[in-house]
Image (tube, rainbow, N blue to C red; front, side, top):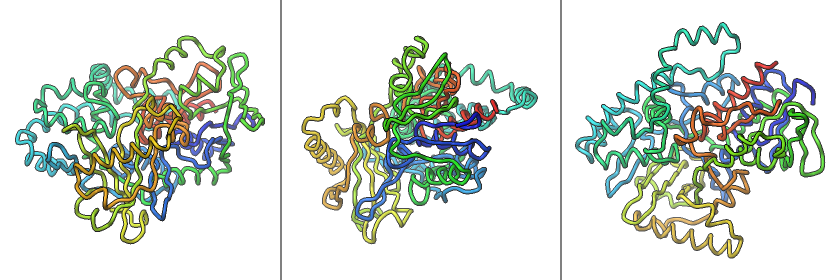
Length: 486
């Protein structure tokens, strides 16, 4: 590989975004993916004519408005998946109440008022506060300006945003809402949404991140890519291939070769080596600095920082065939149950309600998510039996919430934290990488550029963190760094 070439470890969305931009700008791109399919958590598979999303199934940023890096990126590449906007975006079930979150803010408040009489006034005050933060976020470009004159011009126009970011840097979303939202029920509704989008609670979720997520529900909306989450991946693969790039599947990288503080190549599990001076790791920070780079080349401060990163939790997913007659009318595309009455939080996604190709006639394809602890699944002893027992336990719990559910569904597949780790390469089966909490987010994220010359990071171990939109922005930032060098 020559100077204008880049080797990318991992074909997750972050790595593919880097590859697509670099390939489009004339770089020779090679992506090395350990599994048989690209996408990481953003891929689809089929069982008995039912199409399922491996993990990610709820998306922001795909529409032509709001905070939409995905839409803008696919527009730059002149092609992308067709996306379906959801209305309502999803529904939340709490203590017998059903609250639908609509894209239209006033409609959403009217729905809330039916269950929580104080909701309208408190939510308007809350959204007014986070709206100020969102106004500053909207001034941030998706791509970093290359020229100093452009950077200076942006700063002079937007210097007023800096105090807002500084003031809110160490604040949680709870710090913002506690004066406006005093209802404990309303706070629990807000927290249920955070658990889905940020995989965190209101006291740990950064105010800036929370402000973006909550306002985006009504400014940009929630979308689903027609054809499944794998279509997001396929569009990026198509771009890379169209510009001469290559993706190598079942190609496991075992070492990033470093000499004298600079990248010199890659070693693969099949014994081959790749000579290159430019590597982007889309693997996690734990894998990159704990397995792929010899520790003698990594500063102790960085090693300690990576070692202390806390991962997001993992999930247990049940992939279901659901009777159409039972499903329609009773469920939305995304259905969230808050924890309560001794039952855990759950989410049931049924994309076939708006994407007919996802299930055969008379059926729907559903994905039931519950939080799971990686440590409970590390033992290989009786693994299949434990999966069966856990599946029945979870189905028994949702049966209490939705009578008749078990008789109207068939289990086609399941995923544990271990299988998520095995199929996606995500350490600890973590579906969001390191937590995007106050301790680890924004300026405390790992940078895209590492202390090792020629080694860059992309994905949810870097700013801005977890989620498809976040890793897309991460990939854009890493590509900008590389392109600026050339």
